[in-house]
Amino acid sequence: SQELEQSPQSLIVQEGKNLTINCTSSKTLYGLYWYKQKYGEGLIFLMMLQKGGEEKSHEKITAKLDEKKQQSSLHITASQPSHAGIYLCGAYISSGSARQLTFGSGTQLTVLP
Amino acid sequence: SQTIHQWPATLVQPVGSPLSLECTVEGTSNPNLYWYRQAAGRGLQLLFYSVGIGQISSEVPQNLSASRPQDRQFILSSKKLLLSDSGFYLCAWSANGGYTQYFGPGTRLTVL
Image 1 (cartoon, chains in turn brown, purple):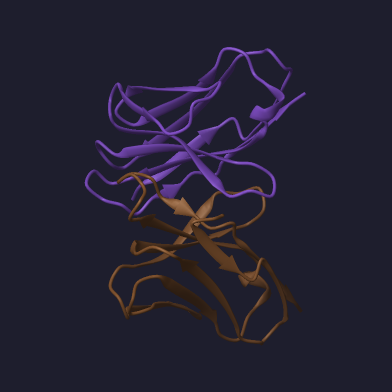
Image 2 (cartoon, each protein chain N blue to C red):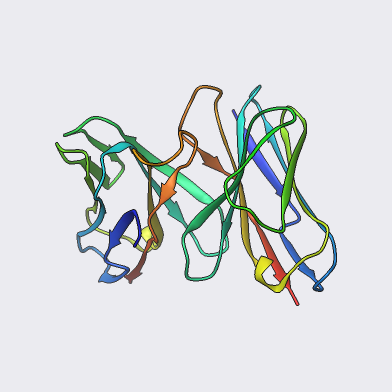
């Protein structure tokens, strides 16, 4: 099974709606990273969370890392077509090597105008 | 500011042919460098990483190899491509001592 589980796998929302993407690990996360990818392009770094309970925002995107540091959520407020793409979470997991950033399988977001 | 380049952007190669993908980083010194493969419908798989010139660590045994001939240059190679080598190859860098990775635009490789 995946070390990082993302849900949902895909999401279709109407423009203007709010949405949440989750990233869950069974192990402690040492640094949780959110990236966005458009099809056929590289990953764009959105934000990094490190401390339990930490919350960061970038424009209309907010990410939180829970107190136990095993789950993160990405929330988009008033979604726009520009938010469409694949959202990936990545983390250095306690069982991995120091240099191995483990990724979830991604959430495909479609925003309908 | 730092930028990362990859080329070529797309490549179609026959089975059994050699491969060379190049990645260069500008605006930083002594970066950590990474090669990932993203296969269709699957997540990102770390292939190689390097913490310095000539220092390569392999995460997955395979048909591929990596080299770092210069501080900001990372090359992914193969002597003979397999069909299973098809995928989207991404190069990334992080600052020396840092953990946030920044990705290049990727190379789409199709092996026929």
